[in-house]
Image (cartoon, rainbow, N blue to C red; front, top):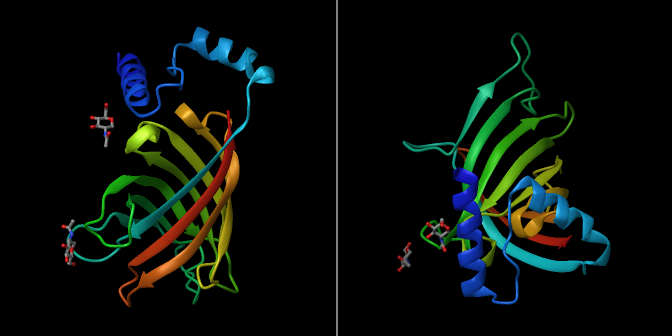
Length: 189
Ligand SMILES: *[C@@H]1O[C@H](CO)[C@@H](O)[C@H](O)[C@H]1NC(C)=O
Ligand SMILES: *[C@@H]1O[C@H](CO)[C@@H](O)[C@H](O)[C@H]1NC(C)=O
C-alpha cells in the first residue's frame, strides 16, 4: 500500500513538473523491466544545491550522539557516533524552503585530526525530486574548506546514481551547530 501511494505520488509530481518524465513504477516487475532497459537509456546529469542544518544544541536538536567509546577520550572525539535527521533547505537561513532531510549517521573516525565517516540518505521532499533519495558515503574532514564525498546510489528519479558531493561550512557556533552548503553533481538514468 505504502509503495503504491509512493508510485502515484512520484507520477503526479513528475507529471506536473516534467511532463516528459515517465512514471516511476516501484513494482518489482516494473523495476526488472526498467533495469533491462538500462542499456538503451540516456545518462542524465543533475546538479543540486542546498544547505544542511546540523542542530545539536537547544530544545529541538536534529542530531544526537548515540554512542561513545567507554574509557577513551580524544580531542577528535574518536568513536563518537551521531544519528541525524537534519533539515535541508534551499537557502542558508533556517526559515528557507525545506527541500529534504539528511537522515543517517556521522561518526568521528580519525584519531589524529577531525574526520567524520558520513553515511546518510538524502531524502528529497520538494519539486520533481520529491520522494527520491541519494545515498551519501564518504570522509568528511570538517575543518577543510571543501570536503568531497561520494554519492553511491539513489532511488526514484535517482536510480543508479553516482556522483560527487562537495560540502563547505557556511556557518557554525561554539555549541557545535553548523550550517553546511552542499553542491552535488550526479549522473543517473
Ligand atoms: C526569515 O527570517 C528573516 C529574519 O531572520 C526574515 O527577515 C525573513 O523575512 C524570513 N523569511 C521568511 C520567508 O519568513
Ligand atoms: C511531496 O510529496 C508529498 C507526498 O505526495 C506531498 O504530500 C507533498 O506536498 C509534496 N511536496 C511538495 C513540496 O511538492
